[in-house]
Length: 73
View (cartoon, rainbow, N blue to C red):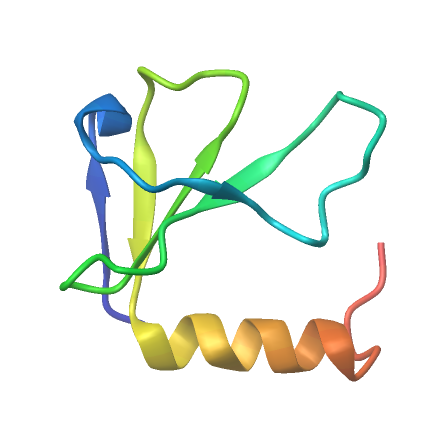
């Protein structure tokens, strides 16, 4: 999988909370849909922290596996 990191992802705008994150206000994953090099993912509790950028095809496969119930905790 082609991925890289952004050490401080706070300069990017347009983050949204993943629909798979709970509404309890605890652990939330944010993603950025319009990044040219892939799909950045970060921890919403650490906005000045890093983001991992996944290849769009890898991210799509991950979401499909979640939706298909292929992944378990």
